[in-house]
Amino acid sequence: MIVPNESKPESTETPLDAPPAYDGASRPPLEKPLARLPPTPTSPSPSGSRSAQSRVVQKNTWTSLGDDVGNLLLSGIGLGSAQRRVAMEVRKTVSGLIHDLVRDQTLESNVSCVPILDSCSEVCAAQSVNLPALLQQPYIEGHTPLYWSIVKRPTEGSEPPASYELPPLIRALLEYSAPLDKATVKDVRLACLHTSDQWLYQALRLSPDFGALSHKDQLLLNLSVPPDTVAVQAPVRHDAPFTVEFEFPQFQKRMRVSEEVSLEFISHARMWEIVFFVSPDSSNNLTEGQWAARLGIMELSAKASMKGQFIFQERVEDGPDQTVELESKGKQIQVALPDAMQYPRSPFLTADGVLRGKLVVQITNK
Image (cartoon, rainbow, N blue to C red; front, top):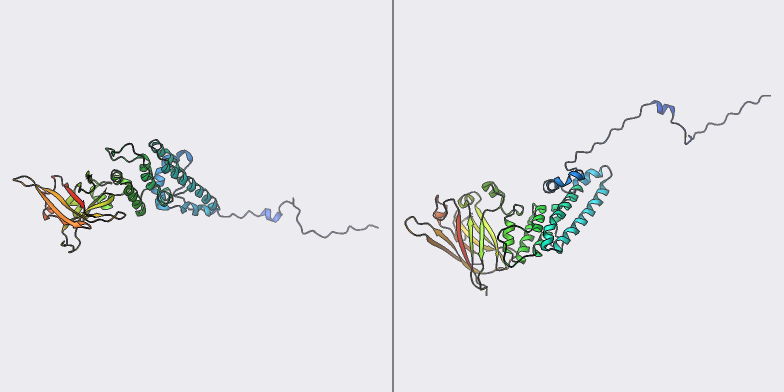
């Protein structure tokens, strides 16, 4: 008798090494559309070409885009956290290097600091770290690196240099920090005031990165730094008056367009400001539209009572020049200027429109 083969129940499990099902293999695979990342305007360049672009990247790109653009783009493909960790390490390392640079200043290290800062800029650019923002953080004992580079600046002698050339470390930090915000400018002023460094403060004001000249005056004068000059003559006796000589090129044009010209200087452990302005209203013994001059003590400085006089030379056609003295006293010195300063071919201006004057100040604190 032939016993028929008993059929085994079909297994529902697919062997591990089984080939793909026929019906699945017969259909074409579904095409999944690729997600497109938006173009990155500041994609880091390869290491070979990074050095040529680092300064441009820091000054223009990161200022407008900020730190988070690269992280936001990378987080869309799962790399955001890794990029942020790398950026944090870069910030920590660069902050430490800059801390050491300003702490251990010597005349020799000041010269060799520039390539170190250049390298920091390249690394920050590659990792989307905003170097100007980092340099303007008061992370060193409550102050910025610029403050400490000024306070700890090594000097070669007691006399200031003949030219207004910034020391290499201060110049490099200033360039990589620009544009400076108001808090950083205040910190720089405080550093110069703490060291009573009139020469260095004037050198900073003559640097385009310090931004001492208003945008309106830059357009008007086609310059990036103030053309004005100031010279302070310190007396031998501490209680004697001190003298300030100043020059303002294109004085009339600037007064009519900008309605104010000013300069700042340091003397007697204080920061002072000379301002020539157009009176906005009738007050303080001035009439609306009248030209006037004022000397005042700026913030961060000890207040003082004073008396003084503005002195100008007036040309006389048929005789010797005359001296015009305008006196005042109080917490600030303010005087109305002669109306002839507004006239064409004013006798108080040079032939090319420069106003020259002198200010003698006596502090009257007991």
